[in-house]
Image 1 (tube, rainbow, N blue to C red):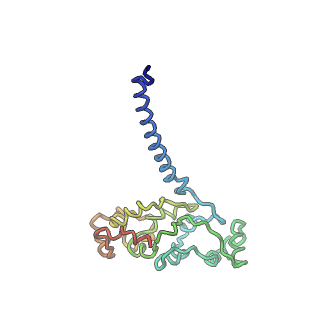
Image 2 (cartoon, one colour):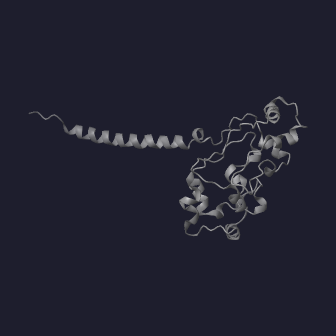
Image 3 (cartoon, rainbow, N blue to C red):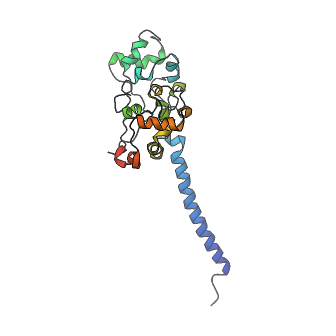
Length: 219
């Protein structure tokens, strides 16, 4: 009986296996890139809001973060300000501006504005805003330089690995408490030794990777 397969078919079989493996690896690599892309994670992409609120504009007038986000230092989450906070100023300033009609309507009808959350963690993630602020983590570390954002966007993808980097080595991100709300502050303006001293002063216990225990963030 004549031989059905010639030696060259061995090469075809090997190339097919290599191509299959490369295809599978390439597929998952592309999927991972898409998953991490700004298109999926919304990083650097301003979110559409009912009112085009500019943090840059309000910060340029010297309004402190805590005037609107009143719970950042003592609450588990940073609150979205109620319409009353907006109207404290806009009863007098730009009181008839068309773009602020949703704000006036909310105030008149006593119905909250449905803002789109920019930093929205999954329900299975527990994040306490106050403890980070009180342990020396500045606003810009997670949110970026908000005072330079005409429209709010997500600066970081908020992957678990990104959080764990800080939990493993808090000295990379801590700053003096009087600089927490300073958006222009550069963490590396202090030496590594000075930042490690702050970790000690703030009683951040990260020995034996305690801060990377699953129960810290998943409860």
